[in-house]
Length: 446
Length: 165
Ligand SMILES: Cc1cc2nc3c(=O)[nH]c(=O)nc-3n(C[C@H](O)[C@H](O)[C@H](O)COP(=O)(O)O)c2cc1C
Ligand code: SF4
Ligand code: FES
Image (tube, rainbow over all chains, first blue to last red; front, top):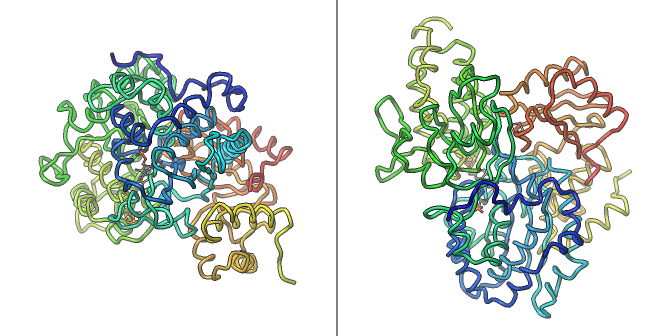
């Protein structure tokens, strides 16, 4: 049975200020599951996580158990790194999750570290999250004081487990896992070429697993109730619930943990009280600004990972009118669930301006290593700005499509796609809005 | 006279060295601490961080200039980070930013003794847009009408970013 509305795992402590305190967390059974997990073998834990169909909540939706199984058997000096850099526009769940339930994250980390044989583990938290940094540092200190962390973690006698909270200093790109690892190593936060993948050669050259905050916070529930139970809460190949962040033009924006089966329409109308000011939806961004938008005719699709990639009610993204974008091997791009950041915009929204703001962001955040990304995001930004100002030239829409297509697939990290996909998506879904801005004839003085 | 870290900062760094295989990963923490103690990361401060962590000045400079929270020149006590990214923009983030500019008499990027005004990218508070953060303090669902009150509050209760370094 898929989860019902009201099923709360990772968000169960929202609003409960006392829960941050380790005593209060323990009174509710906290750290008991980590203790149970110590009696399991690493393989048994990985098997449960595989069976649970838990998928990464950081953006790509990669199966977590599978990711863990890529770490070579018996490897030493493995690291677990938590990605708490949350900065994908529209996403505001991890900040809330660590603020309300820091010990749940630590408990998930202790279990994961046991499964991976990881000793030195890090939480990379975005530099601007100062309040949440304080909460995490205190929680880690409490966990050390109780003996859950340390040389003999969980009182096991011989199993060390350390967690260090590592503060960033302002750079969106450090959310990309290899940039994050470079930043953790004390370098400029620039992405690395893959392969090698972090599971083979990651932090300090050692096998490393990078997981999102929400991903790891689900792990204690899986160990407690079993992988099958978690899988059954979800649908298809996506287990558990989904924590979405709804912002923009709805009556009740918020962070909501919901069944994977919920559709965007239900989400807007039933959970968020409808569109504000009695208006209608023009479209929405389904999973952070790097994902192609949906228009008002595509809202009956559930928020689940696979549905957003394959549901035929979502029109595939095009490079030019009628020319589908090829993700490789003829695969079409519809959209993706991404980071769970859903930004709703109403029928009075200037989508060109909205898209222009997004392109400005990716241009600003490009680390500059790859020419297609560094130059391409700059061109997209510049052209979108002139369209937004009503000074678009004939042919600009085609040019935007060509530039975006030239970036996608040709860069070191996925920031290139993060700019190219929404650009192509906005052009596909709202083409006439862009065309109506291209009024200046070719060759005419601007 | 050459600069020195305070004893408190030095002992914080000592603890951190034990958490990593070398001193290099401590650089962000050291830069945060240095900015707290010296107000900015001018050349002498970069040199101090380099000599403390056994890193070249070029390395420290390269890192310090990559991250937006580090500043090479002193700014105001409070760093007001006003988000204008999509969720905030859709609910009036730019109006809030303009309102801060006129209330403070500062343009984006400028500082006076009390405030530095920064146009920020998404600060993960999108469900309460427009959002503003200053140190450990968030201001949520901000309207231009609230700006005066926020400025007065922060003047009376400063929230410098160095609070948590
Ligand atoms: C440009 C860029 C920014 C990213 N930012 C974040 C982020 O802020 N938080 C996050 O968890 N993942 C982010 N990711 C995804 C990570 O690279 C990585 O896939 C994720 O942390 C893995 O964890 P998961 O498997 O648990 O989702 C980003 C990816 C890219 C390409
Ligand atoms: S794609 Fe962009 S952000 Fe990623 S490595 Fe290349 S230049 Fe840097
Ligand atoms: S867009 Fe402003 S906080 Fe996210």
